Length: 167
Image (cartoon, rainbow, N blue to C red; front, side, top):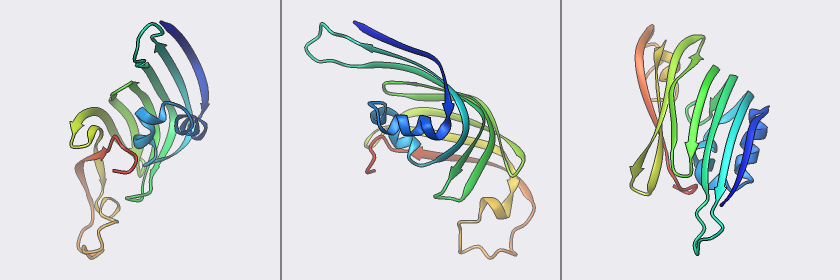
C-alpha cells in the first residue's frame, strides 16, 4: 500500500475549492463544493492510501477541512453564511460535520452534515439550524408578498447535494 499524508496544509478557501475540482477529490467532494462560493481560509488534513497489490485499485481518502472565519455564499437561494468555524470530515464515500458554528445576518447558526444513500448514490445533506429574519429566509419565494411576513423565527433547513455532477 502506498500512503501519502498531507498534513497541516493551509490555504485560501477558493484555492482549496479549485484543488478539489482539479484533482481526484472531485469525484468525492466536487458535487457538494460546486454549489457554494467560499471566501476565507482553511486548514486541510488529507491522507490518501493507494493499494498497489490489488487487481482493482480503490483509493482510500480520509480528510478534515477546518474552516477558519470563513464565508460561504449559496447562489441558488441567495444566502450568505459568515464566521464559519469548524471541521468537515470526509472519506472516499462520505462527508460529516458536527456542530459547526457560523452566522447568517450576524445571528448564530449551527451546521451539521451527513451522507445518506439517495436515488442516484450517496447524497450529502447539510443541515442548518438558527434564528433568522423571515424576509431574508423567504427572499427566493416570489409568491409571498414582502409585506406579509416580518420578524424573526427559529428555522431549520436541509440542503441535499447529489453524488453526480449532473444530478
